[in-house]
Length: 109
Image 1: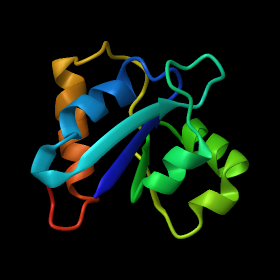
Image 2: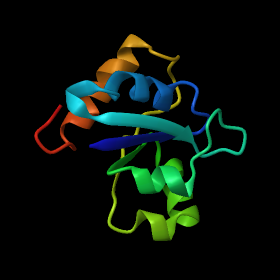
Image 3: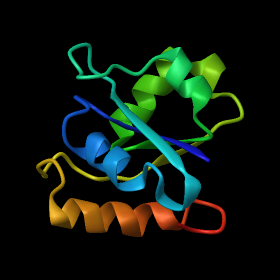
Image 4: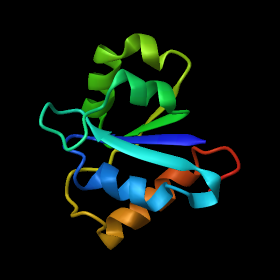
């Protein structure tokens, strides 16, 4: 399954999720940001690649729905409600991600 993780800048939360879940139980993971100055900016191609899209906050989900409505058709999108309070690979962030993602993936992680 292809998992796409989105936050604002693609420097901490979504990048941590990509590192955690890429290759985990055969899943592929990528990450991007919704802001213009993101490290890697979300594109229609990334949305098309993904089987599931995880947004860290409601604002990220709103932004991709506004910009990529067509590409999102039929895609499962999930808002994780994880605030921008963590550093890259923060242990608490990793625990939050592991606990949040498992319930949304068929067969679990």
